[in-house]
Length: 386
Image: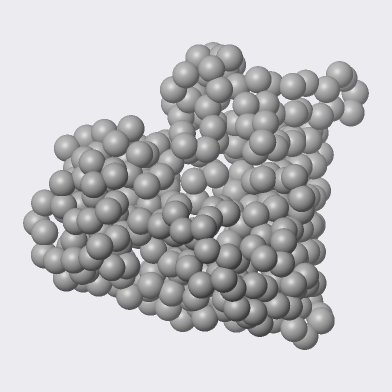
C-alpha cells in the first residue's frame, strides 16, 4: 500500500497487529515495548528493523505514517494524543481511553488534526458479520425486535489465573464487560445500527482475591513472561468483575440482553449473537465463524456457509478465500487494516470512514460507564445522558 507503520506493544496483541499489517501490505518499520529490552526482543523475534527506546524516538521517525497502539489500557490516552500531535495516523486497541472524558478529548483531537483515527474492533470484519449488516440494510430482516448474545472465555477460570487486566488501576474499573463485552456491543451496533438508550446491569467478581505470580503473565498465557517456571505468588484483592449481564433498551423500542464471562470452563473465545427481526432472524458464533444461521417463520431455516459468490458485495470484498477455505480471527485484522489504510489512501476517512473510529471507541466507554453505574446503584441508567 506504500504506507509504513510502527507498533506499540509487545504482548499478546502487538504481534497480531504486525502479522495483520504485513498481510495487508503495510510495512512495519519499528516496534516499541514498555522497556528498551522488550523492544529489542520483539524486533528480533518479529524481524523488524527498528527497536525504539521510547515514544519520543518513535514519534520523531519520519518514516512512520501510522502508529498502532497495542499497549496496556492506561497508556492509550497519552500515546494516542501524542501520536496525533506528531501528525501520525492512529489505530488504537480498545478501550480507547480509561474514561469518557479522555475518549471525548481524543475524538476532538483527531477531528482537529484531520488524521485517520480508528479503534481495533476487529470482530466487525468477519465476512458473515458484514453479510448480516448488509442483509439488514437491504431490509431482509425487517424491523428488529430484540438482540441477544454473549462473549465468554475461560482463561481466568482458576483463582491462580492472573493478568494485569484484572486490576482496575491497570485496565479500568470494568474488566470482562469492557474487555470483551465492548466487542459485542460494537458488533451489534455495526450490524443493526441500533443505539443503546439505557442499561440495567449486574456484575460479579467470582474471585475477590487471586494469586499473583512474582513474574508477569501475558494475556492467554499459562506461564510467566520470559519463560520462567516460577510458582511464587502473592495474594491480590481483585476489584474488577469476572462475570456481567446487562439488559439493553435501544432507541426506537428494540430490546437486548448480553452476558459476558472470563470464567466459563471450556469456552476459549466464544462470541455469539442472535438478531430477531420482523421478517427473519440471524445468528452467528465466532467459534464457527464461517456459518450464518438464517431463521424463517413460514419456510425452512437456512445455514449460509461463507461463500463470496453468495454474499452481498461489501461482504464478498472482505472475503479473500473461496468457499470451503475458512477465514478466522487473524483475517479480521488484515481486513480492518485494508479498510483503514484504503480510507487513508483515498481520503474517505475525512468524511465517510467505514472503519471503527474514535467516536465508536468513545461510544463504548460511555456505555461501560453507564453499565458500571447501573450495577453499583442497582437501577436502569440512561446511556446517552452521562
